[in-house]
Length: 230
Image (cartoon, rainbow, N blue to C red):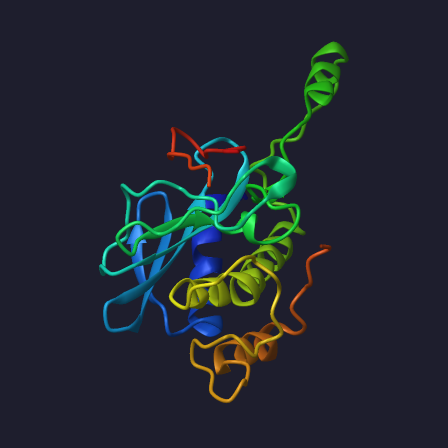
């Protein structure tokens, strides 16, 4: 049976978001899944899972904070933190709107994609064409793909809870300088007295331990995935 990545990943994301971050309302979009949450009057948080438009099986996460209830499609993708080693300075919200990709919040602070099937290197492609070998169809169903896909989505939600939500909260407080990891005391979305939100605990209860990561110049979204924006 053929494995349909786009259909499968959308279902996986929807299932995990319903359990892990139920405060966010799903809004379907053509190239992925969009969620929004009214943080307070006049402040909306957005999470957008963007699925690769190329042949690879991958997705990334974009986030936004806006005074409006619709996704800021025309807003530039911004650098959310200072990256001195690359000469990049954190951008500031414009008219209360700020849009960025989650990969810049955690090391190595660059565009980050969760890949089910990593892209082949140039060397691998050349070797494949130089030597006649049988190449399996990457769209074929593999017994390990559903499990790996679930792990990727859990890791994405872990990073959203650990990095993105605290960062979005901090944008409204001033003085925010970086995207350091939090243990939960700053997760204000659904949390009181420094407690980890129920959504995070629910995610851990359903999926087991959440896997841990090993852990301004602006750019405009281009055609395709927008890999290596900066």
